[in-house]
Length: 296
Ligand SMILES: [Zn+2]
Image (cartoon, rainbow, N blue to C red; front, side, top):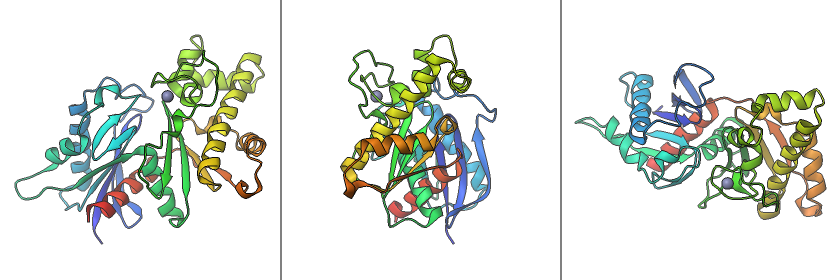
């Protein structure tokens, strides 16, 4: 069976070898230290590409790799990062060429493909659950809010930037746009909103009844429900998966109820939410499978 490599770039870089639809061997992660959300924010684009190539070489350990897939946050066009609101330094950078060059030897050039990170995760979920024939949608909750779908389809699909409020004061989104989902639920945006509290404290305080935090957590759920309802109204009902480092902030029962209030047409009923605890495996598997499929 041919081996491919998958890489997921989120708050850190994680890489692994994929055989069939599972990870073979151990993952390599940079930086190794947990809880270093800021590590990539100040890293130049060339260094990120070099680090990706270094991790791929380490996990491959000298074995031949047929293709490399990289899941990266932002709008990707033919290997170029057109937009990445939370990693601004890489805007316009041809990540595919940079990683391919770093991996190339005199004898071989391994094809590298770049995908949106949430799309890679959606592909990984579809592959590991055997639901490749159905439309799967994913929200990834981290520094930003990612939206992914499988099957992959041409388009921007920046669901995290769905407008969920007309309030002109809502301007915390990393992209600069007003009223966006990510401007409410993104980690970076919550920090900007609550200058006196870390996001984790906001959600902890809400659980113990602090009125300001309770009100905000309700708004987070309404925002995510609104963006989901828009997706249902555009593409129909189906499963929505929630994952990412901050997925434990979301109460699925509340979210279900809110979406039910927002989507009333009978033909559009039947969506459901499922939480998948944050892990790098699905994005790595999805990136590798998508790369293998598009490199041949
Ligand atoms: Zn935005």
